[in-house]
Image (cartoon, rainbow, N blue to C red):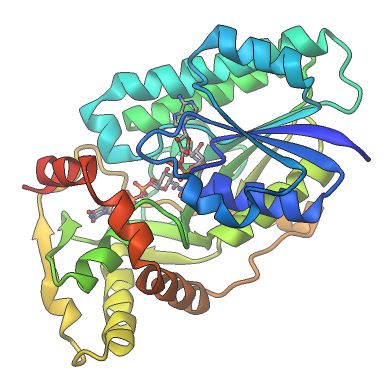
Length: 349
Ligand code: NAD
Ligand code: DAU
């Protein structure tokens, strides 16, 4: 069936994997990738599909309400998969307003534009909002986040994502707009900007730079390979029940320090270094303010109801990820030049 689909944030890490999957898998869909190309957006991520006949890129900022509204009128989108966001917790601690503007106001602008275009005729329409497990706050040593877990966001980033989730559900409830929300755990894989733990540490190991471990290193995250997240998004977009929330996770919890040790071991092997050489770079540094102790997703709803589950083991995914970064030196050099150096100095000096 022919459809015109808007994917926001498609030049970013997860968005680029989603755009690639939809462009290749659905030749009948017209895919419009809308992205402001902030520091995190990079069209190099989509070189392989940039000339596909069913793909269009539009440079626009979701905080520009008028621009967004006229794009909806121009393209008459049937569906929206909304990923555009400011996404890094550490940056949200330094500059919360950027997160409030993009994540809250930007989402409101998209909802308003969809409401205006669809005008109560919702046949075949869907607003799919991509969110995070961080909205649920922090867990103790046990337990899991369920779709019914109360929201308790602790950082400006997660608070802004929580606000955007509430807006989407409110538009569904008030205007009957068809929507789905997914809350996913930590992603890793190729094309992730090297401010997040795994690509930052891969890059530092490669350059024999210190590995800055926050606090005691015993914070826990649940890691999912990004291609599996993109597969989950495809599944939910096509088979998810309207008005529902699905948690997405890797069934794969790691304490940061344990994950870092595995990463160091794999990197030693791949770089032909002596065993233990990379682990010597581990440096404990000042903790992140308000650092959430543990996230763990119960992803059984999407598994049981929609048949999705991760397909890539952590060992395999991590190995592929390291290989990609080692083979794509140019990509890393591009994204770590200029402003990245200033960010790094400020964050880690
Ligand atoms: P990212 O930072 O790599 O990419 C974000 C993209 O959004 C970039 O291409 C950027 O240019 C674009 N963008 C930012 N502000 C914009 C604006 N005002 N207008 C238009 N485009 C703008 O982020 P990511 O890690 O790919 O995350 C994508 C989405 O998934 C986010 O909504 C994030 O909250 C969510 N999420 C991320 C993870 C994760 O582990 N990375 C996990 C769960 C959910
Ligand atoms: O849980 C989903 C979320 O995962 C997403 O919503 C966010 O967009 C994404 O950035 C990610 O958030 P985290 O804060 O969990 O990811 P980050 O890679 O920044 O950090 C992972 C863990 O590693 C966290 O406990 C902090 C720690 N850390 C991170 C960095 C960058 C360090 O110890 N040192 C570091 O230099």
